[in-house]
Image 1 (tube, rainbow, N blue to C red):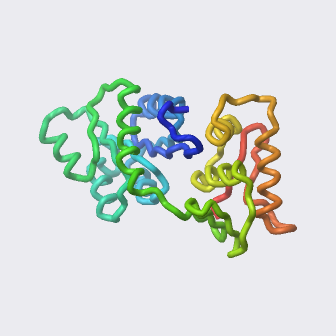
Image 2 (image 1 turned 60 degrees about the vertical axis):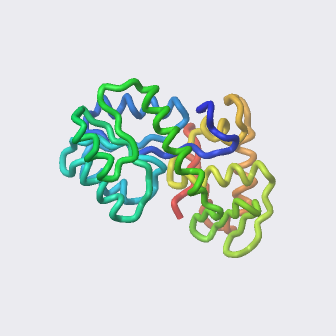
Length: 235
């Protein structure tokens, strides 16, 4: 887990748009080991679609891509009104290229090759800069709502009484809904200490959440992937 991650904060989702498969894998591995949730993408057209989804906390964006240039993607993201931080990655070193990337919508620009540690530090800086002014006070997943100020949960308008750890667990899952969350990842972000493979804390709390938020006789919001972890389905 990153040393600067506030207690209970969710893992930041990073869209990695990079057509070099080995480079993308190296970036994703570095980000994952630093506590982020990376999603690699290898084609510009697909990268544009994902970037415009608004489902990511930060985007690392290669300048030279097949299908759609990185600069076009950055401009499209800004034109859509999204303020997702964009970290441009490029082997282009000329000042004009760097300025074009920043003016086109990039928030920072890193020249290849770069040290993985530098990438992590720059992403952390971008997140600190933006998260201070963009923290939501209400999280929603379908008809399930979490009020982060009042620390209250509601399902179909009905108040759901949650214990503090249950609230933190549900908040983490809603922020990362639709994504597989390993038991280690959940444990380290909710309980904030090293994962114990023998613990059943997660299973107990997930069971309690299901009883409180699920409709009787219907499939649970929280899906189990045996041997892997849990997914809060994108409802």
